[in-house]
Image (tube, rainbow, N blue to C red; front, side):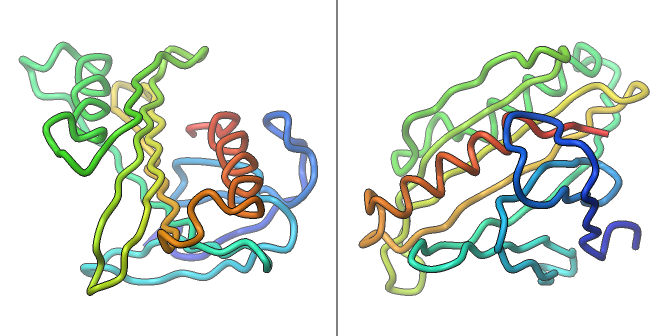
Length: 176
């Protein structure tokens, strides 16, 4: 499957973050990962998932999946499909989710963001979620990022700094 490897590229930065390495995934997204993050590929439900872990003392795991969706005839085209995907992504009716935003991106695409508190197998976690998407040749191309933190670390200074770096990297990411 294309993208099942995490290629690194030390080319130009696509955004403000200039340190680290450029990551491409599934021929869909490129973003600059902060330096010293460990990268690997996991499999969830038969699909490859890019997984990144920050260096200590920050905790948590950044996961990335991508998709390309052809709009249905009555969906309002790619723009309508992206808007629908973004709204579903922020889970407007889920009481565990909060801090939801859906905004346009300068490239005509969309960015959606939310935070969710969960209990995963008896562990309290906080998940920070981002979806970025754009029209690519008449198809809605999206990258979905999530950072899972043990709830005990949520608000920790090192984790807050890490989340700020990730938010900056995702906002500067380029949909291919």
